[in-house]
Length: 390
Image (cartoon, rainbow, N blue to C red; front, top):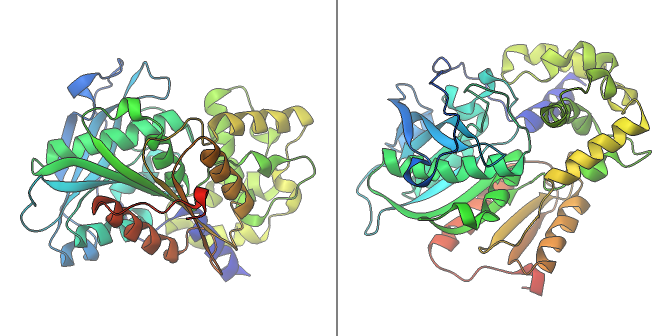
């Protein structure tokens, strides 16, 4: 049972076994929303002295940065940390293409910033294949993770701005980078890169070729349908959803959504490193279905309303999209991804919806699919469109 719980936790939290590579930076705040060349401008940068083995073997380099971006309200500036990876060798004519990576849920506090860890809390598995193909890779931590302020979990606008401005930050750090870029993200990151693809108005000066969303959390509102029993991964996700709702509605209480072992062991269950791995497993065995049930109908409706407000798609995309889901996904019901993709099709989007039989949430097969799909977009190949049966 302990092994099963640990497996579920590792899939949900995308956590690695490494220790932080550096202390959290605390640059001065930027209260006004950046405009023009201020977007993605570098506030600080430092070469990462210790990188993951995959990066070292490829001869790539890594730079941890803090860059300027826009908060979800569109009017306020924010500071975001991340890592820029530069491949080995000479850039091709036109500059290296850039891949902006959205990471899956690691946590909502500063120690959960992937840029503090050599393996990016597991996201290095998405980075390495692109470095091998000669692409610059930017991995954002998202607003409020590793930098001052709270993290607006699943806020599509904040995530979109962070993803796009990470590309601008990459161009500032790597002069040989071009202006063509693609987004790829897993789970929460799939939601982030899809949102970025809907923000064509924010990508001026950059050429987005497409966005690949792997096991994306496009619309979780059905998770709180009346009378529905949550799966174990969905129970474990509930505290993060509660934090996202609290960002919008600070008055909510933990007791509105979690209780029992999920409340008592919240610190262990939401920890973003493996330092509490054994505690996670033990706490997971104590969970019961009633630990993640909204306390009142008003609480349930508040959660549903918020999840609908951050759900995607919200507007058409001008670039091709890909959504990969595992048919055994216990966190994001495959039907939710199919329904969201169908709504995108009705808006006129070009979408490849791909089902991975026998796969669950964020399984490795999705990464291989995403890497190939993004590489094909840079190569100029026609994008598959399952909206038209293609």
